[in-house]
Length: 250
Image 1 (cartoon, one colour):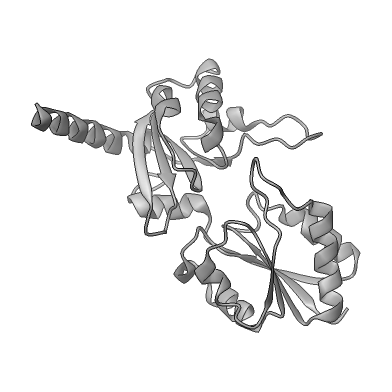
Image 2 (spheres, one colour; image 1 turned 30 degrees about the vertical axis):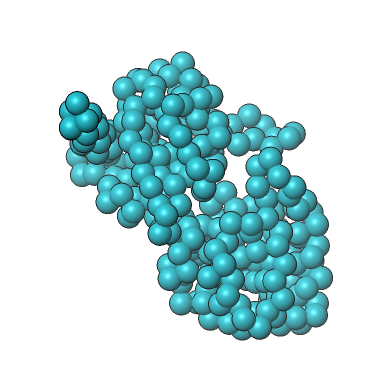
């Protein structure tokens, strides 16, 4: 093999949140295989590279993982620097294990470059820590998504056990998520933050209770559900603001 495949984290969206190593590799890349949600400003950093979309989006046409694996190995035979650009961090809900295992089995050199994951970006955006001294000491990163033929997920038990939870890829299943957690014993009054497009100019955040989660409207942008008592103050402030606005309209 003549080249190396780099699994690079593109972060939550904003190109200036990329690591220095990621920027360097994009500038050196001969070919970039990128996720559907990678921001155009980030792709622009790979000025000399051939750019190949291999994204996976719920409800839309997706590139089969086995096909991506083979394309990466084939590209490494003819190019020195091959970048597999993934949203967020490659090692968190990014199918990195499948690509690493395949490439290593094919004798391809492969390295991982971490990226900022959505939970970190959303927390920075709203200014609320995932942890809090004396109040929130455990954090769970979960997704309710289960692929065809995969074993049942234990995400509900993880959320129940953690002080704070970040639920990835769940905005389209808000009603089912809320119902499942409440049925399992999570109080309907638990504070929730819904953060869209974290790190980008159009970002927005909504606060509600777990019971109210299904009524929150989203724009279809990348969305993270945050759950836990650390969001109680923000929830109360949002409710107060809504009451003030309502009184001004009277």
